[in-house]
Image (cartoon, rainbow, N blue to C red):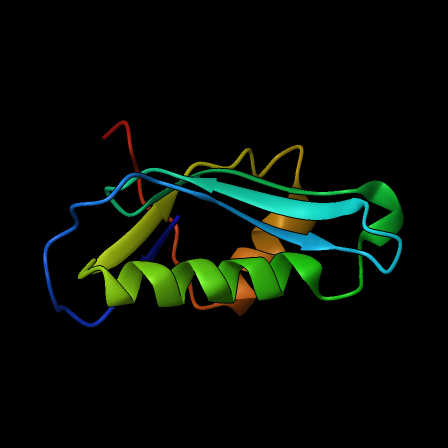
Amino acid sequence: MRSDLAPRQRLDRLGGVFQDADRLGLLAGAALCWTSGFVKDLAVHPESRSQGIGEALMRHVFLIFRERGATHVDLKSNSVKNTAALRLYERLGMIPVDWEG
């Protein structure tokens, strides 16, 4: 999947973990990213799903990468096993990219 971003400056920092904690301070979701505009992992705790946490994390990731100069954001997803994630990525404007061809 890929989302295009407006160009700015070159990436020069390490990736990060963006997280959202629930009212009890427990981790509800996290996004682990590389510096190259790649989302390695996006996870939302099962009890915290369908509350907009994944979308909020991805929008934050897009903002951070845009500020760092990324022109696009990539990630890999198993669309056969994770249709909910695929719907989220498409709702955010991401498009499928053939990584093998």
